[in-house]
Length: 118
Image 1: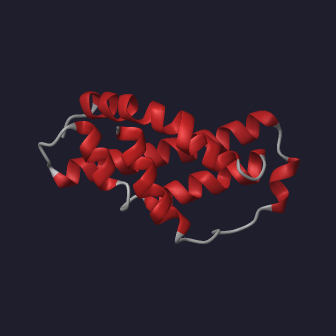
Image 2: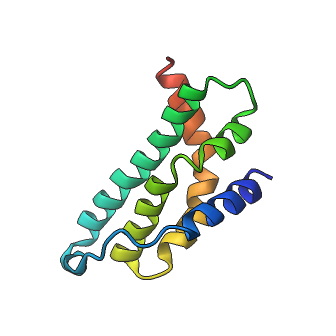
Image 3: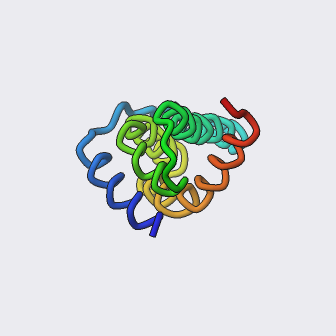
């Protein structure tokens, strides 16, 4: 349910934004460098969700809170998707976002909210 709701909302928001930039130098990066760049952006995307959930101070279920803040973090999510595309090939960002990232996000957000309570 969370995956479908987040994916539906995110695709609408993300589809309405264009690419932020092309980085032709990314093909010269090592696998470790690419992974480090992408990891920073993935963490930044998760931090955006955590920050917005804290700001909203909602008592709703965590899954519902994540869905609610996704439009606010759409730019960050788009940057993450484009980073994957630039580093790992066209389409890899959407695949990561709609698969592994959305599977990982609820646990990561819950852990970060517990580790650093407001």
